[in-house]
Amino acid sequence: MLIGYARCSTAEQKLDLQIDALEKVGCEKIFFDFASGANTERPGMAEALNFARKQDVIVVWKLDRLGRSLKHLIETVGDLEKRGVGFKSLQEQIDTTTSSGRLFFHIFASIAEFERDLIRERVQAGLTAARQRGRLGGRPSIMDAKKLKMAETLYRDKNNTPADICKTLGISKATLYRHLKESKA
Image (cartoon, rainbow, N blue to C red; front, side):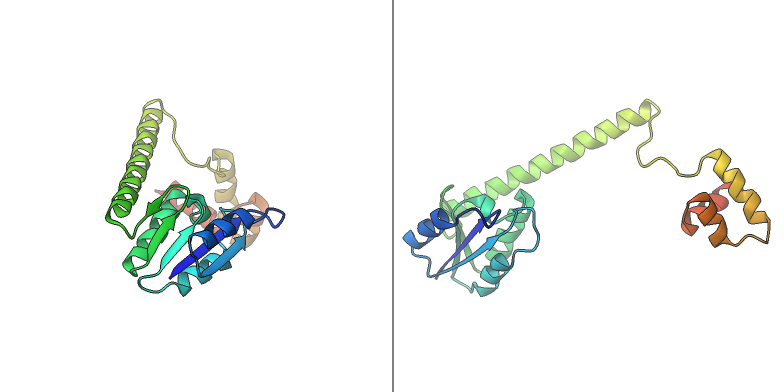
């Protein structure tokens, strides 16, 4: 069975083009959403994926209609493949029910993984170069030397509770205890 899925980003947009294309290729059931591609809550897509059984094929008008990102698309199609459900994208002419379609999709997935690895390597190289120049990454500490000195003084005075010290300095208890522990070490 061919199962169609269509999505538009807003309710003002029309699904007509997608639905017409899905009906033309013979989709017997069509699910749809009006949601941004970045939106994780897409009930129509969830319904379509749950409805699909072994030997069925999920059909979309275009690849970006199914996945929020390339990673999400690859994961979704991989999950379908494990369940014995095919995937077809009309515009890109990808059909994972054929050996050449599966090959093309796997090449596509490999390129995406390669790209992610390159990005990771570039980020690591950038962080290493920054460290060599004396720059440390991460969020700046909320506790400077002056604030730490105040925290230590207030903490030694047993009339002050940790909650009062934190409120006065505008920090959390975890921050207070972590910095007090580090200053003792």
